[in-house]
Amino acid sequence: MKEIKAFIRPNMLNAVLQAMHEHPDFPGVTVSEVRGFGKVASRNPSQPSSFGTVEMVKIECIVEAGHAADVVQIIQDHAATGKPGDGKIAVHDVNSVTRIRTGESSTDVMI
Image (cartoon, rainbow, N blue to C red; front, side, top):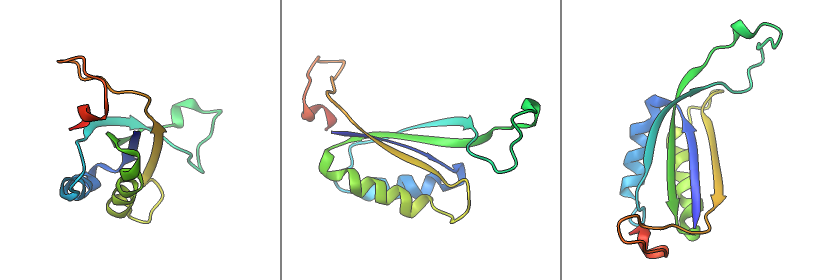
């Protein structure tokens, strides 16, 4: 299993979620509103008051390893504007997932 975390522009969220919803094997997603900043060419580290944060949306999901590339491509296709600040996608290995209600721990808990 793979965990996918993506940080995208808020105005691109609906397009990404719609595309994910249309994927037949997509189990679900968690969305959080977050703030942060990335590498900014004009950032001056000697003036901490000059940095600002921007609103972003964090999308998190756990998928079967075989679907991870598809999900990454869906996010990239629907979140890209071609401008700096479009965001990032990270993919991590997941060792186990446990359903809280039953204590079941297997790939079936993703269904």
